[in-house]
Image (cartoon, rainbow over all chains, first blue to last red; front, side, top):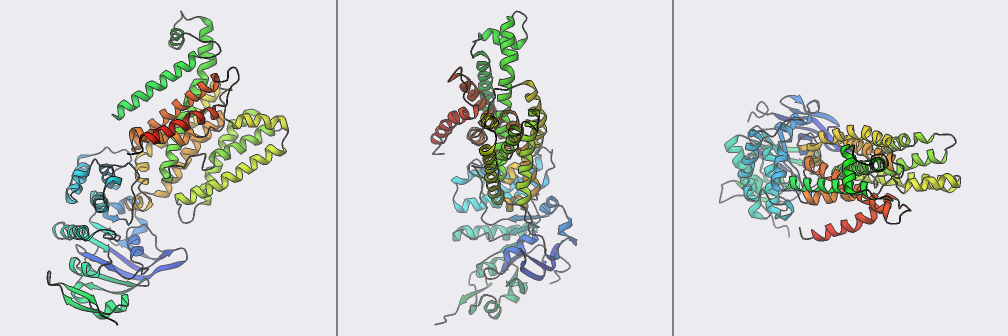
Length: 265
Length: 327
């Protein structure tokens, strides 16, 4: 894998945190282009912090985040948002907002202060609604939707942003199994058919192994291991990161590796 | 649908203004009110003086004060993402009131013509202090609200201190001013209000898209490339200018900045391009009606317009909430 050459987004000795305590320290990470990458690690390992740094929501205490080789801090927020989209965790829409109004917000980084709504904006919104199968919900108020529908609508907003790099912060949390699979399949499809680069914070190791190309294991704000699924989905690594002893099996559906916790008592 | 709602509100405001011009100690016939407004030379001189010179400045000032408060409330609620936020709750009015209090009570040292300037400066200084104190590698709406409430209480305590230890006659005048009053409406006040309000209005209209976006929360807004702290700062500046200008013109009128945006949202939804003008119309309508009531309910005595606004606005607010409780 020559992903160091083929990467638009990378971190170099990145340290970042809230207040004086760094949550992430000395992180060197390249995000492989056109791949689906999962950020894995126990709670508090700094996954979301890394994701927010990649999206320029958090500025580094030391080191830097690079987009196309240039420091993210030096780029304008809107310019970054045209290249990098973020599906935030636990976002709440104001009461009474309609789906279409929310999805249209995805066009914000593409519009100047006095630009009118253009055909390409309309197209991007229609496409986002189509991909997430939410067109029929367009006129509904967001508070009238189910949890799964809501997450699809937020996803539509981020897709309307048409950024080639998508960052997803725990996108499957609070979703039922069907909606989790829907969302991950959609991302897989976007990577395969449109060459998008997707980075997701995930908790389900088996879903990560099944849908993603690359895994990044974090623990206590430091990189433990990264690489393609077959190379790094190992029992020793999972035990080192999560403190859980597992057996690795082959998923009979997909042939990808999967893990089951060992009986410890 | 939205256009109709706006047109209806505009018509209601026009009707309320004309009614307010016609009704008073001396009632002027409707035809003569319209004649005076249109500059018809047939209109009797007396009616012209009453309508154009005595009542019109007051009605215009009432409408503009209401519009400014409606806009300020909408801006504050949008950036705070809190339906209870309004310039009054943030302590901006308290800052203006404290500054005005100082001018009124120290009348020997400071000319009263400085009162609007001081009140306006007080509002701006208050909002700047709130913003600066809530800055900690960026701002959050909760921190701004809490610091606003704290500073507002402090300013209120300062005003109370002055009113307890100040000379009784001056304190009495200050109390009247603090209740919110349009008794002293003059064209020069209208001019000041327009002068301070128009740049703020222009800025608010430029911010329309950003107000829509910031409502989705800091994380989402930043993810879409918004400079959240800059937008919040500009919107607070805007709200402080509008609220400060209206306090300077008519004293603190509570409740309008809270209720007008709510009513407007129920009518036209959350899109600020429509919501801002609708809130301005709602605020204007509320204050014009409140002033009409304030002048007539206990005539010839005049109820403070701030009191009347609360008395009219509160039940109407309740009615709106009750009517739309299932939506």
